Length: 177
Image 1 (spheres, rainbow, N blue to C red):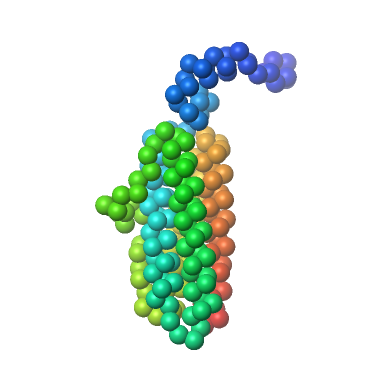
Image 2: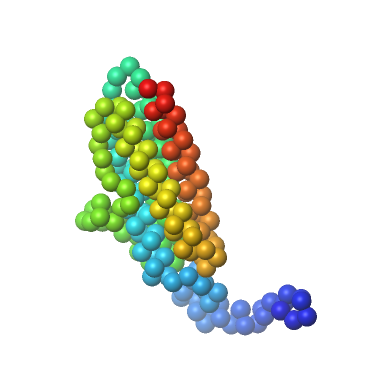
């Protein structure tokens, strides 16, 4: 920046792009600590996978007169959690990491628990608890990342918004029972 004017050093940017072509999306301007971000994203990935599994179980196990509309909600949430997992895995690869889908340690990496619930109300409650955990976890991750990695921050913000929708849906179902 010179005299309040913004100018790009295109020549230097082009040289760095060619010199570090193997680094993919991670350029010299990337300010976050990539190993820390990759660890956070892999933990978030584990959380999403556990949520998919829990929602799928609840979908198949929900029974009773009021279960059909709730089952539809469980299945919709499972699909959306899977989309979150896919987006997180894609971002991990973009940052030069490897998504950890290993079942070994999945629950220890996940922020949420795999609580089965027995009644329809228990299932909804357990899913709501998991959504609330995800919301707070993602908010802390967003705060940590700040402006150092706007792409990852935006992804986490989008996922958080969807998790808030899920929590509201589930709270609404609990209030109807």
